Amino acid sequence: MADWLRCEIASGLQKLLALRLIGTPPEDAIVGTAEVWLEAMAHCSIQWSEQLDSQRVRRSFQTLFRICDRWPAPKAFLDNLGARDPPKALPAPRITPEERARNKARFREIMELLARNKRSQPN
Image (tube, rainbow, N blue to C red; front, side, top):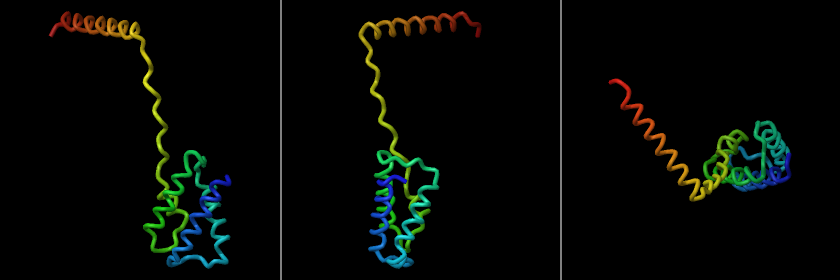
């Protein structure tokens, strides 16, 4: 498992521990609790990427801090993970004035052809 994800999970669990929610594991069991969480993250069919997922991980913990009255299971974290941000759109292709003129002329030809075909068809 990537170090960045271990650090994010450890940090989130430390903050949850500080909330002293009902069902919070005792301090001497937090290392074992963290290992269970890390195992759950390792087997959840997500190909973790720091660039794509670090903000999602933080947001999920922030949601848990806000909504949980009891110590959450890893499932609650995963349920609040949210989708990855979509990739940035590519810029529109640049069209030269000559290409634009050719495209307009071709479009006019197509429209004229369609109009002729429509007129030649019986109703």
